[in-house]
Length: 73
Image (cartoon, rainbow, N blue to C red; front, side, top):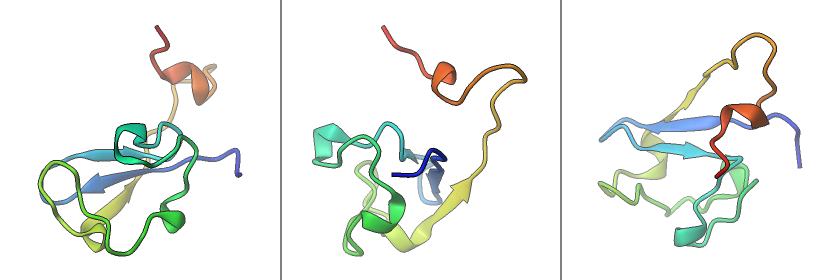
């Protein structure tokens, strides 16, 4: 598994798939890269097909690691 995770934006509704977080409630484990999500998968909010997602870059604030930008309660 790569140390660099990406986020993917649904162009239909703005849903965000985050590789680091995964979607455990939909059977996608944390750390699952986008390439391993089945081609037939669709947005859980609006059923937009996987092909209609765009890679999104959200840089971390200076001095913070990628993991520290997530809320961990």
